[in-house]
Length: 605
Image 1 (tube, one colour):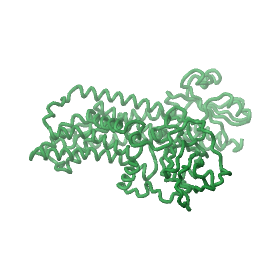
Image 2: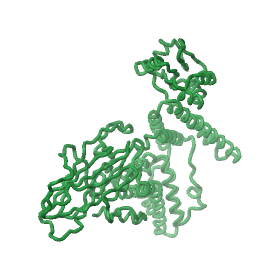
Image 3: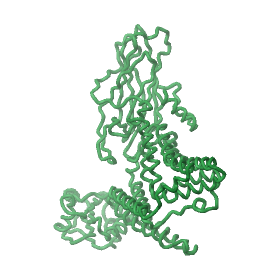
Image 4: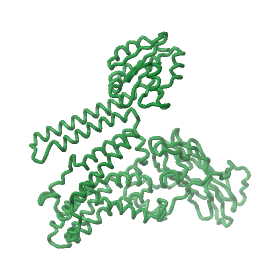
């Protein structure tokens, strides 16, 4: 009951008037993904009799519920909880046999429920059932929770509650059941909502303690440590009227830190969960090549920041003796900015916190995120109340610079790992763009100094931005579009032989990941919209011969050398029906010739 009351209170505070409304529940609930209905086994049940509810799920294609709490995020598997009077007792639900589903993000098989399936909820009516008239029957409600996932996203819909009225009568025949409850042969998933002390599968106090420590650790990040004494002394100088003023300004500063955590972590989580019914687990986002590539590039920029290629200047209101930032509103703003300054170095902690929050009950997630803010704010509250402690803090020095550079190499390693997870066609383009982006960042931060004239500074940085944008258009946007235009098939000698026997044209592009000229051919020839359209219309078999390596995994390497007698890539080969020898192109400018040959082919080969 405590959890229900807390959740309802949170919904009221957020003006979510439709949050847990359960008045007059129906026997069917429907979203754009799933339809759920409930049916009784018997029309009437005798006191002491046994019956059941059948809860039927009809999921759209390619969507599923996780079946086991052990293989999915905590609390996100399918759970059903009956809500009924004390004289009706439910036993463990009977779930169907789950399907095996391979999650590419996790790299392992999961047990899931998909398609149309039924969960049975057996119950027993007490023999001491109160003998008062129940004309409308006894209302039983079923609360349903769980994430509904596809290959690209997960959602946490508000299913509301299903309801059905069970008629209890001493003369109920119970001779014609509408269905038979199968034997329980599968391990039982978690079926009831966990009490508040076990929301995450462990003590809630343990979870909140970890959140506090995570927030506290943000203060030792190299991005924050140099400005920590400056910020505290700034507040102390503003509070020369007395120690009480220093303490209240310090608390206002801490409020600014907590506000940052609400605005950037707790707030977005609440909005996504309440108003969109969506949960952005890291597994979902990492399925997207756009997100993975963007994260990798972002980490490269952060690494350059750690190496000192560019800096983030502290505003004069903090570092100087004058300016804005005075009073309580100024203290709140400085606290917000201090938390913001922690994000470049503490991004991993903050990202993990947001990802974890998306897998927890909303109230626990919100409280834990705010506790992180309290953890980061705690040292400031102590220092502003006892500023003499500042003298005992370790002084900034070379050790801090070495620590920052070490973090930079760690970030580069993570960036390389992310890039390696991208599709081969995208991977090389992201690497090229990372080099250009690094050069542009170096221009931005290294080609100018504090004393550089404003006009020169603006000119250099404008050139850096334009160069980065042009490189992005070249390597990322245009490159991504070009890789989608022809549905290349991996090299297969049998597939080629079969197509030639059927009188079908075959186009083979021999390439390699390390080949710069191959990328030029891809862009100048095969990214041509007219050529890609002709390949589809003329039913040409497009074959990609990857010669990056040797061995059985690269049969195209053997074929290039031993069958087609070509010394190197790039090479494009076209087999036309009725011709003994294929046409070959070893250069880069053959788009017009290839287009002319494809136009002469019949449309229905």
